[in-house]
Image (tube, rainbow, N blue to C red; front, top):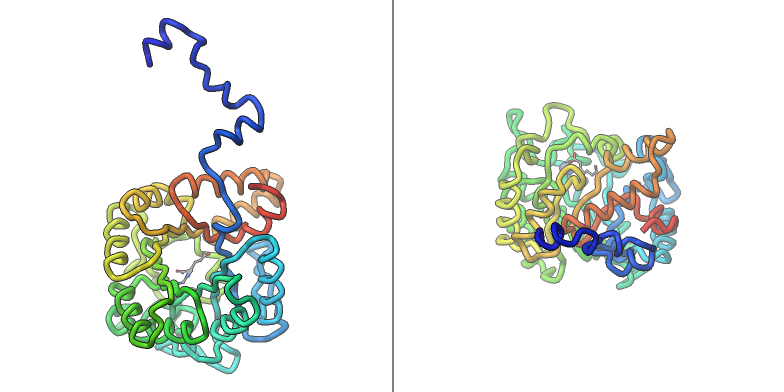
Length: 334
Ligand code: PBG
Ligand code: ZN
């Protein structure tokens, strides 16, 4: 190779494959397709509610009726998977154990039921399994003496996953980061006859400043302390492989790395050590940062979103959980 270049300069020209759009498309290594998108939704209990999220322009919390409409029009764009987040009904209160998380008539449970009866197998309904939007302290597990205890947090998480499965969820995605919750949830689902419900593990979820806008929207910020005793430390990548391996052994069907853009190395590492489908969560703060810069005219949104989505796929993610999906498809940015 080096010989060739030295003796015959000009023979090797990588630019030949960049000459025009058709050639570039022909040799492109990476593609993003609508079928690879999973779109998050914040579900409100009230039927007609629409509450825009100020730090996430273009995204709103939606009541059930509006959610059905939004998902219906997204389906026409080719978006076939959703990830549901909820909050307690107005009548329900946040409690120490977050019991509103597994109310059979909670917003997520009702939305799951409605979406599946409306769209059936055309739509994959995934649900986020966590307690933080439902606990009065805002942590993802049970708090004892100021510490988020692990094992006592498993039962309520299993209950929550079960309530989503009962409502018809195709997949449940635990985001709490307690140890052993994948095994506990798998066993709980199987014992209740939900052996076909898919388990998408937030395998490597980092304690991140990029969750800020989401926490405002979901009203799920911890009232005291932070999540560093259960979410991962951003300095660690090998640990992500241990987390992924454990979740796989415990019965996860799919793995997730979160956030995405500051963790592309982690996506690549997990991709090269596991054969399970791998999702990456392009989180709220990553979305907000692009939107804010674009609104100021500092970045070209179409180009930057395309670049970010390609980077996530290039790193090795099979699915992308992203708030950009609708704009990207409509705008022809892919
Ligand atoms: C809570 C949860 C968070 C996100 C998804 N589930 C926030 C957190 O851990 O504090 C973040 C999603 C986003 O920022 O888009 N378990
Ligand atoms: Zn949580």
